Image (tube, rainbow over all chains, first blue to last red; front, top):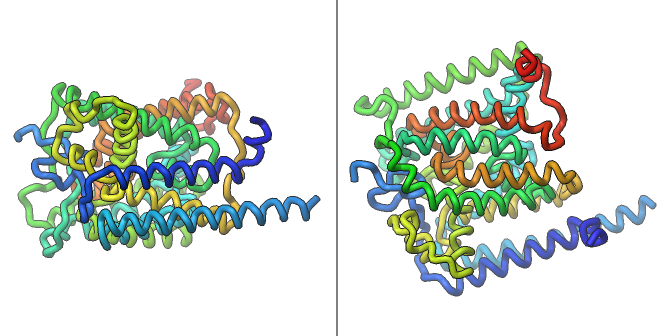
Amino acid sequence: MKHLLSRWPNVIFSLLVIGFLGLIVSDHLTSQTLAGINSPARASGACAPCGAPCKSE
Amino acid sequence: MTQTAEHHYQISQKTGFGLLGLAAITVLCLILLDSGIAGAGLFIVGGALGAMFFGVSFGFASGWRNFITSGDGMSLAGQFVLIGLCALLFIPAASLGFNVARTIAPISVSLFIGAFMFGIGMQLANGCGSGVLFSFGGGSQRMVFALPAFIVGSVMGAWILPDMLRWGSVDPVIIADGWNIWAQLGLTLLLVIAAIAFFWRAGRRAGGQLSRRMLTACIVIALLCWGAFLLAGHPWGVTFGFTLWGGKIAQALGVPIAQTEFWSWAGPARALSHSVLADASSVMNIGMLIGASGWAIYTTRFGQAGWPPAGQVMAAIIGGLLMGVGARLGFGCNIGAFLGGIASGSLHGWVWFICAFAGSYIGIWLRPYFGFEQAGQRLSGKAQA
């Protein structure tokens, strides 16, 4: 373990990039296609960047 | 010995660029499929921001800490210069015919609590939303702990936000609402200029200076923020991407988060059911990670800080959790709420700044307990008094 840590950035960086890439590809393959950029802030009735609705809604 | 070290680094640089290139091309192709040219543009802008932030070490957290501990407000003055430049486009853009919206958010109890928590967290973790991203990209071992904690915290924050909004909330307040758009812009710029003057004077008294390099960086970052604004249709935000990543992971692990109130709101529900590469914030975050990594490897600064001691690892985890929860309750981080909010002429940006600043005092006071060096004389003097 100590040897692995001392090899940072080589080993851990490689593992992180490969793992992250795997997650992105798998999410792409299992999610619906939108064919456009999405932001919750632009959803109808959104009153905050996260898409929280207005109190008056 | 030197030859061995150089040889070791050359392998690292080669490996790094190879992996990054593979990641960048793969992600770019998938983005083109999921979100088209606008998404690809945001990915490239994110990459440029990552390289820029890492290259000039543009840190919000350290700038605030400099002011609190030594009275040097120059970095904060620079941050307000950036905000002012962004406001020049954000406020009048919709009136000029662009299909864009400003960053607005309610003035709620959750905003006060969330921003305060965020302020504490960013000092403990040694970076804010963008700081955690570009430092992680640059190989910071500390952020290997802070980023996952940030993601977990933001999922927790998303879970409690709907209930906290019921504690008290009023709809977003636009500064000088009802005035014409140029008067709104003028008033926000006046407030921003007053902030620049205040922090610049404080910086001068403390012997600091706003370098030409930092001013140039502010202009370049502002131009990139303009680009992100026009491509995404709203100002740049970082933390919703973390919430979405956490939400997706939780869902994959069988947690029924889609049934919770936050994820049933139209925007988050849509994001959860589609690819992360169709989410503006996620696309820019991934670009920022790759851009910062690329610049760090190119300048041979990748992962040079070394592993932090156990106390600082604990601070990174606690700080990440606080920032995650705080960002959701406070409607964003230094980018989405402070920069985006103030530059959009929304009152919540100023409220966020004041509350997060108060939280930063507490965070800086706590830092020595986690093994960070003692705060500057200004703060220790006050603490002793």
